[in-house]
Length: 274
Image (cartoon, rainbow, N blue to C red; front, side):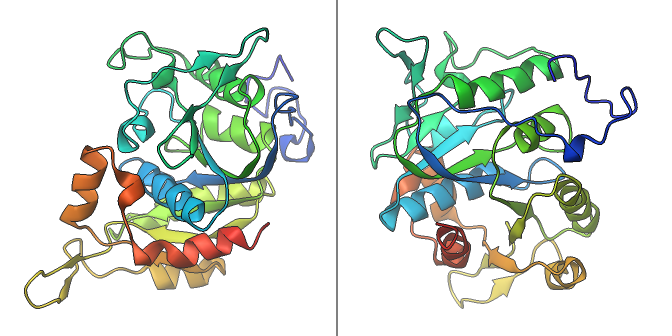
């Protein structure tokens, strides 16, 4: 495994049938792991990850976020802990996660940088190794649901997460544009190749609601998410609107205070896994 180039033609073995999973830290306790994925960037995976973790946490479950988007982490700022730094565990070669105001455990690359604005200029295998260390070298305490915020695409990091972590299911995030069919198809096909259960699709930026008349305005055009979901035989779990309240809370690092009813069904599907 240590010599894997992620090019399956180089060794002739079917990686989807090999066991690459690594154990978490011996003092960690994690019950369920949910991946949040998309075939492209800019669709709102980090927002959906944060909303789900906060919503499930409000239901009384202990939640955590492993921020696997190493080069573009936004999770810390959303929770108002961007200036925090991960602390070493006394007497052990391990780290404690940063804990938010409501008790959500987080680990992100920004917690390890001297300056949160420093760029991470690493090649893919090094980035994938860092994500794996977030799993093996961080002590996650009594986590019911861990959400993994993945970078866009189907490259090194998603492959590492799918192979190394015991993923119990993924949620695909999309947006209403026509390109969404290709986006969803790439993510779904990768999950199927890796034998990862697909819990459903969340459509972000689905519409804008007029504050005066309440009319739903589809600024990206008519969504075809239902047709796509039916084609893959997976459910649509949420249609999240674009709204000023959400942007304001994220910018203020106060995402835990948000109440987004549209995310409830997705949260319930996750909670049924336990």
